[in-house]
Length: 237
Image (cartoon, rainbow, N blue to C red; front, side):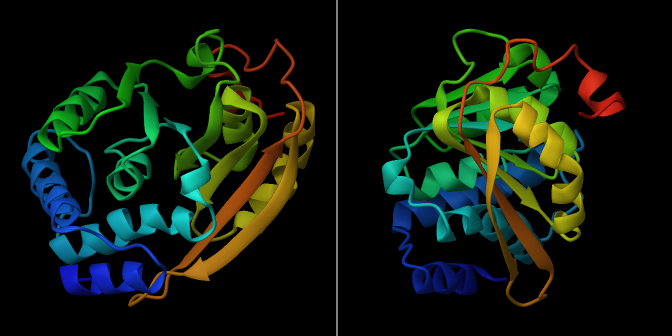
């Protein structure tokens, strides 16, 4: 996906990018490639691949969410900033919090945020299990996102405790999302959530499958969740 296709496909979905926003995406790409030479941030480094599989893919969330009605987002395990930083570029009013367990990724994201001149961005080096126990963050977010982090049965325990009541957890998945959803139904219920919808589509050009799983936070998550670091992954609910 070249930059013109990127701009055009977003325009078709009602997302118009200003010259400044296009410049931010260009700076994002160049900074990502530069830092990727000294740390492993992504296996995709060609410009067309990054614009399609990282930037555009991240923004697909906005095809199904009205971000004008969202303020606070937490992105769990964002890695090189996906999906939250591309969404922040498109919707500058968003207040973005990113938590990642790898300090060098947080260092990259802090540098990137400065390079892109972003405000209302907050970065935390922490395990999701301990971060979700922090009273300053627990059940404080309108929307919590996770993209390609873990299976849904695990992600639900890491993410739903951060979602405020009536808020949404959005899991961004490739293929086999229906199987993951079936495995996670017990966890979703125990953690105060309710499955809302699954949106299936294909990325343009390469036609690879993508799935967005929306979970509505019905009631407060029991205080014992999430369990100790590592436990959700070893023993999903």
